[in-house]
Each structure stands twice: as C-alpha cells, then as structure tokens.
Image 1 (cartoon, rainbow, N blue to C red):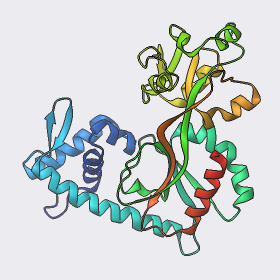
Image 2 (cartoon, helix red, strand yellow):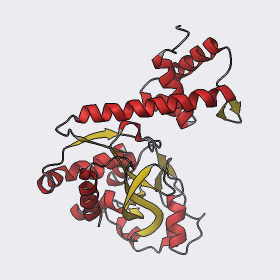
Image 3 (cartoon, rainbow, N blue to C red):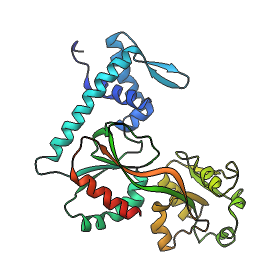
Amino acid sequence: MSSDLPPLPALRAFEAAARLGSVSRAADELHVTHGAVSRHVRTLEEALGTPLFARQGRGLVLTAAGEQLSEASGEAFTRLRQAWRELRRGPAGGPLVLGCSGSLLARWVIPRLARLGEELPALTLHLSVTEQPPGPDLAGLDVALLLESPPWPAGWRVHELAQERIGPVLSPQLADAGAWARLPPADLAGLPLLGTRSRPQAWPEWAAAQAVDAGALRASRDFEHLLYLLEAAVAGLGIAIAPEPLVADDLASGRLIAPWGFVPTGARWVLCADARNADRRIDALAGWLAKELG
C-alpha cells in the first residue's frame, strides 16, 4: 500500500460505515457484502496499525483514529460527490437526480411521471432508490423525497410538502371485509394486522389517535418493505397500515378500502436539497409535489 494515500475502495467502505454507523448499512449502500466492507476496514487498520472502530454493545463506535479519518474522508467524498454531480449535469443542465425509497418510487412517483412531464416539460428526472435516509451530504443526490420527522441536517434546504396521514386499508375481496369494516377501531385487536419492520410504531400511532390503547393494536405479520405490505393487503392477507398517498390510487380503483379513515402523524413529506444548490428546478419540483400530495 502506498504510504501517502490509502486504497480508495477501502476508504470508501470505511467512510460509509463511519457515516452510517453500521457495516451492514454501508454494505447496503455500496451494494456489496457485509464481509467486503469488513475486509476493507481491516485493510486500513492493518496499514495504520491501530483500530478504527470499537465495539459498544451491539454497535460500533469510532476510535480517536477513526474519528480523524472519518472527518477527513467524509469531507473529501462530499466534495467529490458535489463535483461529480455538477460535471454530470453539464453546462446545458442535465437530469435532476431524485432519491426516494423503492416503495415510494413504485407506488407514487412512477404512476405520476407522465403528468409531471406534461406539467413541467423542462424538468428531466434521474430516479435513484435510497432505502436509508441519505446523510447530510445527500450522497450524490440533487434532491431527496422523504417521509420523515424533523430535525433535519443543518446543511439542507427543506421544502415541507404535506403532513403524513396514515390509516388501515384492506381488500374488499376479503370474505370478512364487510363485517370487519363495521367494527370500531378498538375491535381491530385480534384481526390479522399487517405492518412493516421499519415502522413498528405505525399501528400504535393510529390507535392512540383513535383514543384506543396504543398497545392494543400490533401487527401480527411484518414485511420488510412498505411495497410488500401493500401488495399483501391487495392480496387479501389482512389489514395494512399505510400512508394515505401511497394507497390513493388503490382506493380510487376499488382495490382497497379504508373504512376507518386516516389520521395525521408527526412525520412530514419533504423534498430536501443541499442548501448551496441554487438550481431553480428544485423549487418547481417542490411546488408540483406539494400540489400532488395535497
């Protein structure tokens, strides 16, 4: 290994693990295995002769050397991402890179792309799936469409688009759908309730808003992603808890029904960008998204 510069693949793996606080999340972001990230980190530790991470409970914390390298590598990769984004855009203005979750992309963004093209013809989007909320540097994205709760990183410019609303939905084709739909919210306990592992608090939040004991309604079956959860509801596997915009098309077509309505939560639909990004297309996109979500 050169004494004046570490191998860039190893440094990239370390930077992601340090920024995300997890080897597994770094592996997901870089589309490599957990073992590959661990090997890259070990390569750096062996070259430096000192550990970069230390175990703390089930998680990892940076050592003093890790903190120093994390600060330097984070700044360097942020500058590289910004430069790469500007070069990719080119002097004529290239596509605006929009990041969002796969569920949001499939259930809400893609069905509206044709309308977006008609109403904002000068805007071309490049869509990027990001299952984890991006870091403060937005990881190479121009903008990120998120369903999250504040506070937001200090370096972001955040367009608040709409308050989140969630509610139970089920297929009208279920044999018991008619009887279930007439039940009061408290009586949903004991029915097949569906949820996601990433949002275990959704059912308790909805229950509390309905003046029902927050611990009374718990998912009996969890899915890895919201997309799978909603397809399970359409397939008649039970009652799912979902954000209203992501089931709006299913409600309109009759594939799902929402007999108990939707309630607001503390989360927000937001479009985030680097505060230094002065691209006017971001404001236009934020206005269009707010209108659609409204």
